[in-house]
Image (cartoon, rainbow, N blue to C red):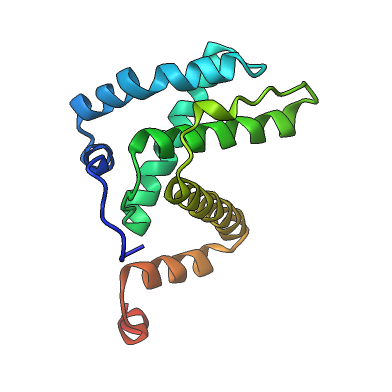
Length: 159
């Protein structure tokens, strides 16, 4: 992705990272209505849509913090695609309701699809890691946490 230009909507990612209430409110004002409408038209309700939006914002925040997410497409396309996929995954998990998909609502953008795929893969790996990490003993957890914070194994050995 380094060969692509960073999109001007990177300001939304930076605003999330900085916990900038103005930017976060702008995200809700500009982008949430489209997601709410989509979910309500696809077997959902407003509360479910708000939950999905919140989860996706947390996912984007984690992606930005842990993987230095750099947008190469409009935030709207990326955000909507993640919300849409998360909602469709929720429907698959919880019910056999019919799903109506209006593909015209999503702008066709390869880089948005690429980012969404990366994000989904990252989220799946993060979930698996967290589940496995919780099964470890306290000593193992402490050792691994030390390796996350310290760069060299020699320093971990000394700590």
